[in-house]
Length: 129
Image (tube, rainbow, N blue to C red; front, side, top):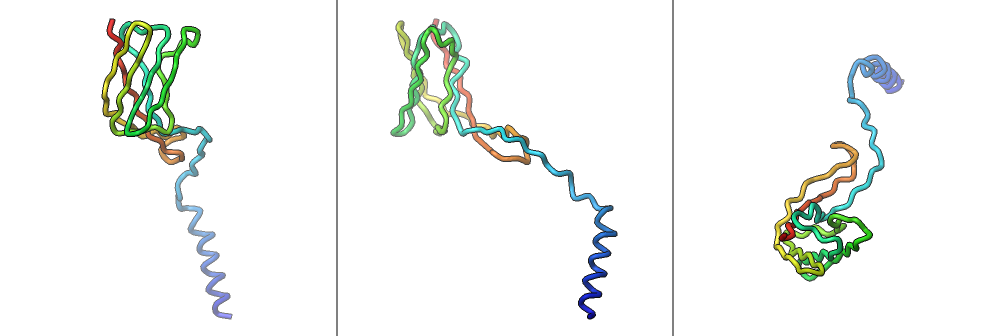
């Protein structure tokens, strides 16, 4: 019988005390997705209308082709986050190659308290003019 009274008293205290406590506002997270990625954008200089971007790190090579009708400026390589990468841009008039160490930033598209958490680096390649 005593245990019931204790439980009742604790329950009543919780109902009386907790409404005055702030447990923080609930966080509403949206469903925006993100992917760990290396972004080769902002081609600078005399950018050709058609080109191929090839990225290579360790034993993996990925390729992106831009045609004149695509009107693209760079490429996104998802699930590819090397610490050092060789980037080669090739077009009909030549090519340029750079070895870069990408600086990855943490991206949280739904806010700091919401998943997912991704890493993304953006690099710029200059096309000689």
